[in-house]
Length: 149
Image 1 (cartoon, helix red, strand yellow):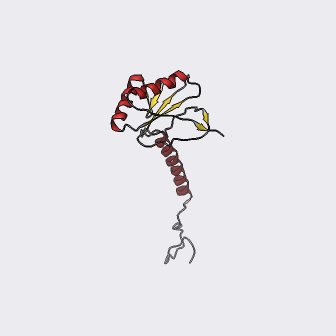
Image 2: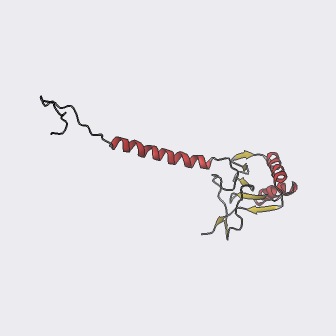
Image 3: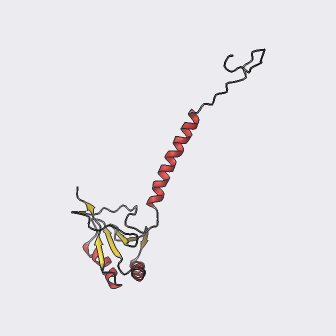
């Protein structure tokens, strides 16, 4: 029996192959896999969880060691090089930052405020954020640094 022939076909006409070419299917699946991988990393970076592991690009100064590990209840405040404050992925002003500190203090008085300031931010701006946290009763403060290499 020849390939592509239907049994009992006496005239010998080609009916077509009964095989499936999976090359296009494989190509489509690989493209979809790449799309899902890229979009999942974007979604993780934009998550509003508010933890210290945000997708912000802050050029942290180098430090000796990492003593503080962020918990889900901790507040991470990023101070950008232009002096703006970022809390949970949103740019906030000083009043909104103070309100967020007060709400966190009401929920958990042991909340740690982690200040992640860009390397070029003046020292006074970092102190200003820390004083805002202390003014509402949050006394546990930490400065975010990147590990020295």
